[in-house]
Amino acid sequence: MLRKICPRHFVTTNNVGAPLDTIDLRELFRNLDFVCHDNYPGFVQIFFEGGKMPPEQVATVVALGHDSMRSVKDGKPFLIMEEQSGKAGQSFFGPQPHPGQLRL
Image 1 (cartoon, helix red, strand yellow):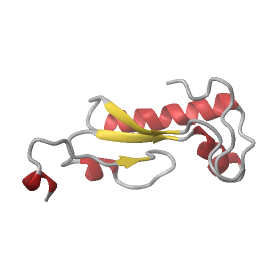
Image 2 (cartoon, one colour; image 1 turned 180 degrees about the vertical axis):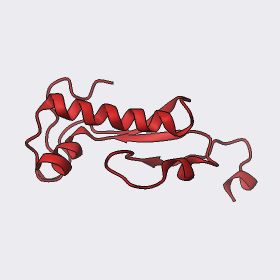
Image 3 (tube, helix red, strand yellow; image 1 turned 120 degrees about the vertical axis):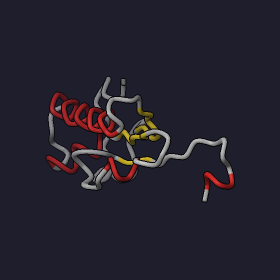
């Protein structure tokens, strides 16, 4: 429908990617113009270690998420659509990122 109404516009959506999501990303982005990723290092800490994961391990999981999104369209570039810029919501939901953790 969007392509019919706005044929000159890009069409995409965003997703958190592996290992936080189990959606078939290739299927999700198959007919979209490019892949978009949400980068929330604080969420990684919560999902895997209850907020106690060392920064080095968080970086590894975040890198896995970026690599998974890059692979969805066979290595074509992807965009970061959302980025955690600081503490998000309650402390149990999005802890303050470690210094330097938000650099891409």
